[in-house]
Length: 309
Image 1 (tube, helix red, strand yellow):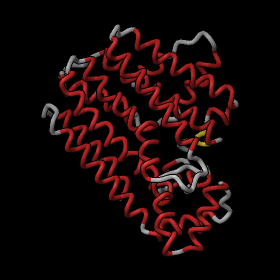
Image 2 (tube, helix red, strand yellow):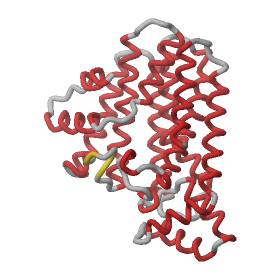
Image 3 (tube, one colour):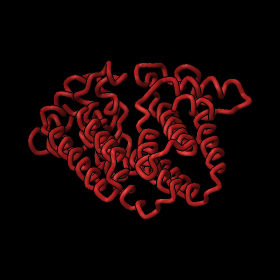
Image 4 (tube, one colour):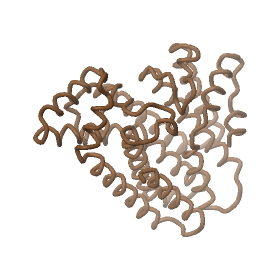
Protein backbone atom coordinates (compact mmCIF):
# COMPACT_ATOMS: atom_id res chain seq x y z
CA UNK A 1 0.00 0.00 0.00
CA UNK A 2 2.79 2.40 0.90
CA UNK A 3 4.54 1.70 -2.42
CA UNK A 4 1.26 2.41 -4.17
CA UNK A 5 0.79 5.75 -2.37
CA UNK A 6 4.40 6.86 -2.93
CA UNK A 7 4.21 5.71 -6.56
CA UNK A 8 1.11 7.86 -7.07
CA UNK A 9 2.94 11.05 -6.11
CA UNK A 10 4.09 12.59 -9.34
CA UNK A 11 5.20 16.17 -8.94
CA UNK A 12 7.93 17.91 -10.90
CA UNK A 13 8.52 20.13 -7.85
CA UNK A 14 10.97 18.56 -5.41
CA UNK A 15 9.54 20.37 -2.37
CA UNK A 16 6.10 18.89 -3.05
CA UNK A 17 7.63 15.41 -3.16
CA UNK A 18 9.68 15.96 0.02
CA UNK A 19 6.76 17.27 2.09
CA UNK A 20 4.31 14.64 0.77
CA UNK A 21 6.75 11.82 1.53
CA UNK A 22 7.45 13.26 5.00
CA UNK A 23 3.74 13.29 5.83
CA UNK A 24 2.94 9.85 4.43
CA UNK A 25 6.06 8.40 6.10
CA UNK A 26 4.74 9.57 9.48
CA UNK A 27 2.86 6.28 9.48
CA UNK A 28 -0.69 5.83 10.67
CA UNK A 29 -2.95 2.81 10.73
CA UNK A 30 -3.81 2.84 6.99
CA UNK A 31 -7.35 2.11 8.18
CA UNK A 32 -9.16 3.66 5.22
CA UNK A 33 -7.23 1.88 2.43
CA UNK A 34 -7.56 -1.37 4.40
CA UNK A 35 -11.35 -0.90 4.44
CA UNK A 36 -11.38 -0.31 0.66
CA UNK A 37 -9.33 -3.45 -0.01
CA UNK A 38 -11.46 -5.62 2.33
CA UNK A 39 -14.67 -4.37 0.67
CA UNK A 40 -13.25 -4.99 -2.80
CA UNK A 41 -12.28 -8.59 -1.97
CA UNK A 42 -15.60 -9.14 -0.20
CA UNK A 43 -17.34 -8.56 -3.56
CA UNK A 44 -14.78 -10.33 -5.73
CA UNK A 45 -12.07 -12.49 -4.18
CA UNK A 46 -9.39 -11.59 -6.69
CA UNK A 47 -6.53 -9.08 -6.36
CA UNK A 48 -7.35 -5.89 -8.21
CA UNK A 49 -4.88 -3.24 -9.26
CA UNK A 50 -7.72 -0.74 -9.58
CA UNK A 51 -8.74 -1.38 -5.97
CA UNK A 52 -5.14 -0.74 -4.89
CA UNK A 53 -5.23 2.58 -6.80
CA UNK A 54 -8.53 3.53 -5.16
CA UNK A 55 -7.23 2.61 -1.70
CA UNK A 56 -4.16 4.80 -2.31
CA UNK A 57 -6.44 7.69 -3.30
CA UNK A 58 -8.41 7.45 -0.03
CA UNK A 59 -5.13 7.51 1.91
CA UNK A 60 -3.93 10.58 -0.03
CA UNK A 61 -7.15 12.42 0.77
CA UNK A 62 -6.90 11.42 4.42
CA UNK A 63 -3.28 12.60 4.55
CA UNK A 64 -4.26 15.94 2.99
CA UNK A 65 -6.88 16.52 5.71
CA UNK A 66 -4.30 15.75 8.42
CA UNK A 67 -1.83 18.26 6.93
CA UNK A 68 -4.52 20.96 6.90
CA UNK A 69 -5.65 19.97 10.41
CA UNK A 70 -2.14 20.40 11.79
CA UNK A 71 -1.92 23.92 10.34
CA UNK A 72 -5.31 24.90 11.82
CA UNK A 73 -4.42 23.40 15.21
CA UNK A 74 -0.86 24.78 15.09
CA UNK A 75 0.32 21.25 15.96
CA UNK A 76 4.03 20.53 16.13
CA UNK A 77 3.70 16.77 16.50
CA UNK A 78 1.61 14.02 15.01
CA UNK A 79 2.13 10.37 15.96
CA UNK A 80 5.24 11.47 17.84
CA UNK A 81 6.91 12.99 14.74
CA UNK A 82 7.27 16.64 13.64
CA UNK A 83 4.37 17.86 11.48
CA UNK A 84 4.88 19.34 8.00
CA UNK A 85 4.05 22.85 9.24
CA UNK A 86 6.62 22.51 12.04
CA UNK A 87 9.29 21.11 9.68
CA UNK A 88 8.69 23.64 6.90
CA UNK A 89 6.01 26.33 7.46
CA UNK A 90 2.24 26.82 7.29
CA UNK A 91 2.16 28.07 3.70
CA UNK A 92 4.15 25.07 2.41
CA UNK A 93 2.00 22.60 4.39
CA UNK A 94 -1.30 24.09 3.13
CA UNK A 95 -0.17 24.09 -0.49
CA UNK A 96 1.11 20.50 -0.32
CA UNK A 97 -2.20 19.47 1.28
CA UNK A 98 -3.91 21.11 -1.70
CA UNK A 99 -1.60 19.23 -4.06
CA UNK A 100 -2.51 15.87 -2.44
CA UNK A 101 -6.24 16.57 -2.93
CA UNK A 102 -5.68 17.69 -6.54
CA UNK A 103 -3.51 14.65 -7.25
CA UNK A 104 -6.14 12.31 -5.75
CA UNK A 105 -8.75 13.69 -8.17
CA UNK A 106 -6.24 13.59 -11.00
CA UNK A 107 -5.88 9.84 -10.35
CA UNK A 108 -9.66 9.37 -9.96
CA UNK A 109 -10.20 10.61 -13.52
CA UNK A 110 -8.21 7.56 -14.68
CA UNK A 111 -11.09 5.27 -13.65
CA UNK A 112 -13.35 7.01 -16.19
CA UNK A 113 -16.26 6.51 -13.80
CA UNK A 114 -18.64 9.39 -13.25
CA UNK A 115 -20.31 7.70 -10.20
CA UNK A 116 -16.88 7.31 -8.55
CA UNK A 117 -16.01 10.95 -9.25
CA UNK A 118 -19.42 12.00 -7.92
CA UNK A 119 -18.92 9.99 -4.70
CA UNK A 120 -15.48 11.46 -4.04
CA UNK A 121 -16.31 15.04 -5.01
CA UNK A 122 -19.48 15.08 -2.84
CA UNK A 123 -17.56 13.44 0.00
CA UNK A 124 -14.64 15.86 -0.19
CA UNK A 125 -17.08 18.80 0.01
CA UNK A 126 -18.63 17.20 3.12
CA UNK A 127 -15.18 16.74 4.70
CA UNK A 128 -14.32 20.40 4.09
CA UNK A 129 -17.68 21.49 5.56
CA UNK A 130 -17.06 19.32 8.64
CA UNK A 131 -13.70 21.01 9.16
CA UNK A 132 -15.23 24.48 8.79
CA UNK A 133 -18.02 23.53 11.21
CA UNK A 134 -15.39 22.43 13.75
CA UNK A 135 -13.60 25.76 13.30
CA UNK A 136 -16.91 27.59 13.75
CA UNK A 137 -17.45 25.85 17.10
CA UNK A 138 -13.86 26.16 18.29
CA UNK A 139 -13.72 27.68 21.79
CA UNK A 140 -17.52 27.51 21.96
CA UNK A 141 -18.67 26.07 25.33
CA UNK A 142 -22.28 26.11 24.05
CA UNK A 143 -21.56 23.44 21.39
CA UNK A 144 -24.00 20.53 21.67
CA UNK A 145 -23.74 16.80 21.06
CA UNK A 146 -25.70 17.35 17.86
CA UNK A 147 -23.12 19.92 16.67
CA UNK A 148 -20.38 17.39 17.45
CA UNK A 149 -22.11 14.63 15.46
CA UNK A 150 -22.48 16.93 12.46
CA UNK A 151 -18.77 17.77 12.67
CA UNK A 152 -17.54 14.17 12.87
CA UNK A 153 -20.01 13.04 10.20
CA UNK A 154 -18.14 15.35 7.83
CA UNK A 155 -14.56 15.29 8.98
CA UNK A 156 -14.23 11.57 9.83
CA UNK A 157 -17.14 9.34 8.88
CA UNK A 158 -17.51 10.65 5.34
CA UNK A 159 -14.11 9.29 4.28
CA UNK A 160 -14.95 5.89 5.82
CA UNK A 161 -18.11 5.90 3.69
CA UNK A 162 -16.13 6.82 0.57
CA UNK A 163 -13.64 4.02 1.30
CA UNK A 164 -16.44 1.42 1.41
CA UNK A 165 -18.78 2.69 -1.30
CA UNK A 166 -15.93 3.36 -3.73
CA UNK A 167 -15.05 -0.35 -3.71
CA UNK A 168 -18.69 -1.29 -4.46
CA UNK A 169 -18.88 1.13 -7.42
CA UNK A 170 -15.58 -0.22 -8.73
CA UNK A 171 -16.81 -3.84 -8.48
CA UNK A 172 -20.25 -2.91 -9.93
CA UNK A 173 -22.11 -3.86 -6.74
CA UNK A 174 -24.31 -0.80 -6.33
CA UNK A 175 -27.04 -2.75 -4.52
CA UNK A 176 -24.79 -2.73 -1.44
CA UNK A 177 -24.24 1.06 -1.35
CA UNK A 178 -26.84 1.77 1.43
CA UNK A 179 -25.44 -0.94 3.73
CA UNK A 180 -21.89 0.28 3.11
CA UNK A 181 -22.92 3.88 3.84
CA UNK A 182 -24.39 2.72 7.18
CA UNK A 183 -21.29 0.72 8.02
CA UNK A 184 -18.91 3.55 7.09
CA UNK A 185 -20.86 6.22 8.93
CA UNK A 186 -21.27 4.29 12.19
CA UNK A 187 -17.75 2.90 12.19
CA UNK A 188 -16.38 6.40 11.48
CA UNK A 189 -18.46 7.85 14.34
CA UNK A 190 -17.23 5.16 16.76
CA UNK A 191 -13.64 5.64 15.61
CA UNK A 192 -13.73 9.41 16.24
CA UNK A 193 -15.52 9.16 19.61
CA UNK A 194 -12.87 6.66 20.76
CA UNK A 195 -10.09 9.01 19.59
CA UNK A 196 -11.67 11.83 21.59
CA UNK A 197 -11.99 9.67 24.72
CA UNK A 198 -8.30 8.77 24.44
CA UNK A 199 -7.44 12.48 24.60
CA UNK A 200 -8.39 12.22 28.29
CA UNK A 201 -7.30 8.75 29.29
CA UNK A 202 -5.00 7.39 26.59
CA UNK A 203 -1.26 6.79 26.54
CA UNK A 204 0.33 10.04 25.32
CA UNK A 205 3.49 8.28 24.06
CA UNK A 206 1.47 5.73 22.13
CA UNK A 207 -0.73 8.48 20.66
CA UNK A 208 2.19 10.76 19.83
CA UNK A 209 0.47 13.78 21.40
CA UNK A 210 -0.19 15.12 24.89
CA UNK A 211 -3.34 14.36 26.85
CA UNK A 212 -5.73 17.31 26.85
CA UNK A 213 -4.50 18.69 23.50
CA UNK A 214 -8.08 18.83 22.14
CA UNK A 215 -9.12 20.90 25.15
CA UNK A 216 -6.21 23.33 24.73
CA UNK A 217 -7.19 23.74 21.07
CA UNK A 218 -10.79 24.48 22.10
CA UNK A 219 -12.16 21.61 20.00
CA UNK A 220 -15.81 20.74 20.67
CA UNK A 221 -15.37 17.02 21.46
CA UNK A 222 -17.99 14.77 23.04
CA UNK A 223 -16.12 14.27 26.38
CA UNK A 224 -15.89 18.05 26.91
CA UNK A 225 -19.46 18.73 25.80
CA UNK A 226 -20.84 16.01 28.07
CA UNK A 227 -18.64 17.04 31.04
CA UNK A 228 -19.89 20.64 30.84
CA UNK A 229 -23.46 19.35 30.77
CA UNK A 230 -22.90 17.12 33.84
CA UNK A 231 -20.89 19.65 35.87
CA UNK A 232 -23.37 22.50 35.42
CA UNK A 233 -25.50 21.14 38.28
CA UNK A 234 -23.12 18.84 40.20
CA UNK A 235 -20.02 21.07 40.37
CA UNK A 236 -20.61 24.75 39.41
CA UNK A 237 -17.02 25.70 40.25
CA UNK A 238 -15.58 22.92 38.06
CA UNK A 239 -18.07 23.84 35.31
CA UNK A 240 -16.82 27.43 35.37
CA UNK A 241 -13.16 26.35 35.22
CA UNK A 242 -13.74 24.02 32.27
CA UNK A 243 -15.91 26.55 30.44
CA UNK A 244 -13.18 29.21 30.72
CA UNK A 245 -10.56 26.69 29.48
CA UNK A 246 -12.70 25.86 26.42
CA UNK A 247 -13.27 29.57 25.68
CA UNK A 248 -9.66 30.70 26.11
CA UNK A 249 -7.61 27.59 25.28
CA UNK A 250 -5.52 28.41 28.34
CA UNK A 251 -4.88 25.24 30.35
CA UNK A 252 -2.09 25.87 32.91
CA UNK A 253 -4.11 23.58 35.22
CA UNK A 254 -4.43 20.87 32.52
CA UNK A 255 -4.07 17.94 34.94
CA UNK A 256 -6.83 19.30 37.15
CA UNK A 257 -9.11 19.78 34.14
CA UNK A 258 -8.40 16.26 32.87
CA UNK A 259 -9.33 14.93 36.32
CA UNK A 260 -12.55 16.96 36.19
CA UNK A 261 -13.48 15.24 32.92
CA UNK A 262 -12.50 11.81 34.23
CA UNK A 263 -14.44 12.26 37.46
CA UNK A 264 -17.62 13.62 35.88
CA UNK A 265 -18.85 10.32 34.43
CA UNK A 266 -18.78 11.77 30.90
CA UNK A 267 -16.20 9.23 29.64
CA UNK A 268 -18.50 6.34 30.59
CA UNK A 269 -21.26 8.01 28.57
CA UNK A 270 -18.88 8.50 25.61
CA UNK A 271 -17.69 4.87 25.79
CA UNK A 272 -21.30 3.70 25.63
CA UNK A 273 -21.95 5.97 22.62
CA UNK A 274 -18.87 4.53 20.88
CA UNK A 275 -19.99 0.96 21.60
CA UNK A 276 -23.52 1.76 20.34
CA UNK A 277 -22.07 3.13 17.08
CA UNK A 278 -19.82 0.04 16.78
CA UNK A 279 -22.86 -2.22 17.18
CA UNK A 280 -24.75 -0.31 14.46
CA UNK A 281 -21.73 -0.68 12.14
CA UNK A 282 -21.65 -4.42 12.85
CA UNK A 283 -25.39 -4.74 12.20
CA UNK A 284 -24.93 -3.05 8.81
CA UNK A 285 -22.45 -5.80 7.87
CA UNK A 286 -25.24 -8.41 8.05
CA UNK A 287 -26.58 -6.94 4.78
CA UNK A 288 -23.31 -7.65 2.93
CA UNK A 289 -21.90 -10.89 1.38
CA UNK A 290 -20.93 -13.33 4.13
CA UNK A 291 -17.27 -14.30 3.72
CA UNK A 292 -13.91 -13.88 5.45
CA UNK A 293 -13.51 -10.31 4.18
CA UNK A 294 -16.77 -9.29 5.81
CA UNK A 295 -15.44 -11.01 8.92
CA UNK A 296 -12.28 -8.89 8.50
CA UNK A 297 -14.39 -5.72 8.57
CA UNK A 298 -16.15 -6.98 11.70
CA UNK A 299 -12.78 -7.64 13.35
CA UNK A 300 -11.63 -4.12 12.45
CA UNK A 301 -14.55 -2.67 14.41
CA UNK A 302 -13.64 -4.91 17.36
CA UNK A 303 -10.01 -3.82 17.12
CA UNK A 304 -11.03 -0.15 17.20
CA UNK A 305 -13.25 -0.73 20.29
CA UNK A 306 -10.43 -2.60 22.04
CA UNK A 307 -8.58 0.74 22.32
CA UNK A 308 -11.07 1.62 25.05
CA UNK A 309 -9.86 -1.19 27.33
